[in-house]
Structure formats: C-alpha cells, structure tokens
Amino acid sequence: MDLYFFNPACELEVANGDKNYSLQKFPQMLENDLRTLPLSFAKKDDYILTLKPTNGDRFISLQQAENMEFDNFFPWGFSPRAFNLIRNVRVKNLPEIENFKNFYSRQNTVDFLSAFPLGERFPTENEQPFIAKTADEAFDFFKEKFSLNYKGVVFKAPFAASGRGVRIFKKNELTINIMQWTNFVIKTQGFVECEVYFEKLTDFSMHYTFLNGEITFRGLSVFKTADNGFYQSSYVKKFSEIPGVDFLTVSELEEMQMNVLKKSVFKENYSGNLGIDCMVYNDGGKKKINPCVEINCRNSMGRLALELSDKIAENSLAEFFVFQNDKPPCGINEKPNFENGKLKSGFWKLTEDFTEKFSAGILATSQKFL
Image 1 (cartoon, rainbow, N blue to C red):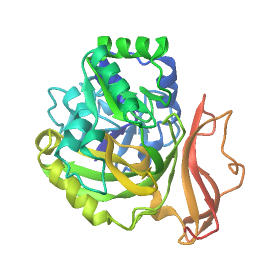
Image 2 (cartoon, rainbow, N blue to C red):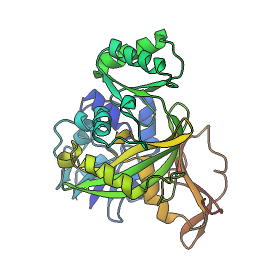
Image 3 (spheres, rainbow, N blue to C red):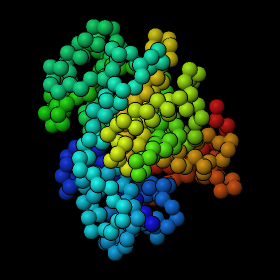
Image 4 (cartoon, rainbow, N blue to C red):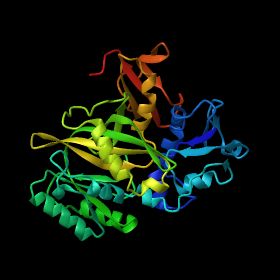
C-alpha cells in the first residue's frame, strides 16, 4: 500500500530549501485544484494524500495518514516540504535524500549533454548550453551567439520547469529587463543556464523509472507548449516512433540516454519517475534533435499521459489538458462516450467539478491518430 501526493511546485520548494515553505497563491491553487491526478498512477489499494477535503475513499487527510502504515511515499516530486509533511507517517521504504538540489538543478542538463555523443543528428559543440555564474558571463554568451547569427538565446533559472523561469530572447538587444532578471536569478539561485534558441518543430519526452539502482524505460510521449515554453497539452498515446523523424529510432535514443543516465547523479541515489524533455528542431532546412532540453526528476503530465493511454479507444485521438477554468479548450462540453470501458470521444474530466482556478482532463475525438 503506497501513499501519493501532488506537489507540482516541487522545484520551487527545493529552490527555497525550507521544509516549512509556504506556497504562494498560484502554485497553491494548482496543488489544490489538481490534487486528484495521482489517482491515475495509484493501484487499487493505494491512497492519495490531500491537504484539502476531497470526495472519495481513496483520498485521505494528513491526520488519517498518520494512523496508517505505507510501503512507499510517492509525491509528484521529492522536496524538503513533502518529506516534512509526512514526518509522522510510517513509511517502510522512504528514500534518503541529503541534497535535493543535486537532482533538480539545470546543471544536470548541461552535464547530460556534455556526455552525450555529438553528431550530425544532434546539436554541435558550439550549441551546447553554458552555466553562467556571473551576469557578465551570461551577457557575453548572449552577444557571442547573436554574432554567430543564431536566431535567439534562451536563459533559464536553475530550479524551474514546465516553462517557468525561462526567458526567450529573439532580438540582439540587452534590455534593462533582461539584465535585471539575469542579475536577480544569479543572486538568488547561483547561476543562469544559457542556451542557443532552436526553431522547434516537435516537443517530446522520454520517460524512465529509477528503482533500487535499476533504470527502466517507460515510453515516449509528445506534448505541446506555447511560444513562451509553458506546457499546454500531451497526446494520450504511446509512440513507437519519434514524430516526423526517420534518422533516429526510439530504441537508439533510449540506448544513448541510458548510457548517460547510468553515469549520472541519478543512478545511485534517485528513486521514482524521471522524464527527459527533447525537441525536434529545424536547422537550416534539416531536422535535428536536442536530446535533453531539460530533466524532470519528478512525475510530469507527459508521464501521466502515458499512464492513461490504455484508457483510450484504439481509433480515437486524445489529448490531456491542464487549463484555467476561464480559458477552457474547445470541446470540453462534449459528454464522454466510452466503448468497452475506454474513452472514445468527448471530454473526461479528471479533477473535481468545482475547482478554484485549474482543471484537467482528456478530450477525445473519433478519428484515428496519424
């Protein structure tokens, strides 16, 4: 019997470091509104920890959890706050994590790519990300890449994900806003990761599970992001090929990534799901792949979409959405239509009926996926 907990702001919790960290309003609403999502991972005898009353016998309060015993604890992402919440809960197999930042830092993305084999299918040596520990280093990177005629530069805060803490610059102009943001991130988090801007064609992620020192590949998911990098939706489907790519198979990319992961900081000490976001991009009319845009050492919406893929009818196209209630995707008013227990068409809501700001669910149409 395992205990799950949805804490989507785990990167912020790790960046802060305080076990008593109080979430700000926006991430607090996200945690409360989407707290039912771990149910998609849980087995029939598992429970979901919620900090707000939730209907259903699978959801329990902290007080209830403290009177029970569990085999494992699976938060959305491990953090000092998550560990502190369950300090009085009996968990048999609780991983020992001394430094959470070792896992969450974007330094891992830079280390991963530096160990990844270069070649015509991947970014060149000149296109590798760079860790800038001073603002001058970051601005020098900015000026250099524009002088080499790249289409832009991307700066990323060390502890952020899903499009948060990312700034995309497509103009060769160091504005006051760029300089202020860069200085603030370096002062508060220690560095800024600097990258070349690639002309994205497709976002996808490779998913793995770490358990007792062993790594298992779980599959490839395809997702959509807005121009600013924020997550929008994931296709609820297990992909056997990288969409639009004929020069690299999923198994080849898996093998390359596995070779790097087996030598990484995650191999010995990390436990749980891990996703590597990747990108198919256009390089002067030629398709190439960035094999590690970022590493998510937590659950993700793409991993959730993989888990839900068996619940979709064979000839249906389905997308998993997280959306603000005042900005719903088209089609969510269509009633769900199930066939043999699987969603064929319509919108299947996975959150409660009355959420404060956010909702999530699957929208399916009766057309075969291309």
